[in-house]
Every structure is written in structure tokens, then in C-alpha cells.
Length: 162
Image (tube, one colour):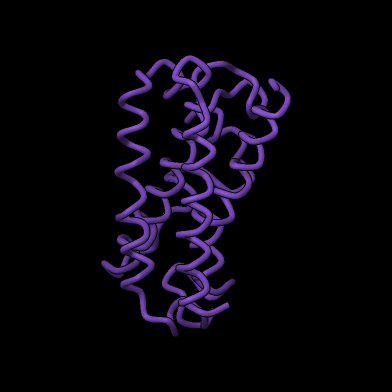
């Protein structure tokens, strides 16, 4: 992986995701069952949440502080509970608000990756989140890989409906 490929993957997967979302009628966006009980709208809330979390980790690390990951008071073992809290909090939000948040979340996330030096993205020792994995893996997990995962669920839901 290099920065050029990472950025290409992020852009390409986001475009693919948005093309699938364009196939959803407004009424279908709020129908449950896309991912478990989640609707397509709930998937958008989920994706925007994780993009924002990723940006928050980087901003916190840039201030010289250690980000609480995945969230304050939570651990990676709590991700399913966290995702459920995000779902519960967002499920009654108006679709227009969710779409706006989803759209607004992408460019700052992409810009953050674009602005990050390639050596910081690739060298685990330079990862501001800690020297476990290279930063590009965190970026991909919260962008391109995440978009692909949920695009596939959305496509499967549409295919099942004919």
C-alpha cells in the first residue's frame, strides 16, 4: 500500500457506495434489514460516525494527546455495543439530516488523509495513534474498507428485493 493507492481506494469505494445509494428510493432508505435491523439510513449514520471518530483520533494525536479509542470510556471489545448506541441515537433522525451529515463527513476525512505525510501513513513507528499498525490501515478501515463492506450489504439488500 502507498498513499496514492490508499487515496484511490478511498475515492473509488466512496463513489461505488454513492452509486449504490442512488439506486435507493427515498422510502427504501428507511426500511430495516440492510444490516441486521439497520436501514440504509442507519448505515449512513454509522459510516459518518466512524469517519468522525477517525478524524478525532488524528486531531487529538496531533495535539500531542493520546486519543481514547475507539471512544472515551470504550474499548475495541465494546465495538458492537458502541455501534448499537450509534444506531439507537441515530435511528429516529430525519433522513435529510443524515444524508447531509454523511455527505459532509467525507471530504474532511479525505483531506486529512491527503494531508498526512506518506511516511506517517506507512511506517507503524510513525503512526500517531501508536506503533501497532500503520496508520493507513486505520484510514482504510474507516473509509474504503468500510464503504466496501456496507456497499456490499446495500447491494445484497437491493438484489433480494428484485
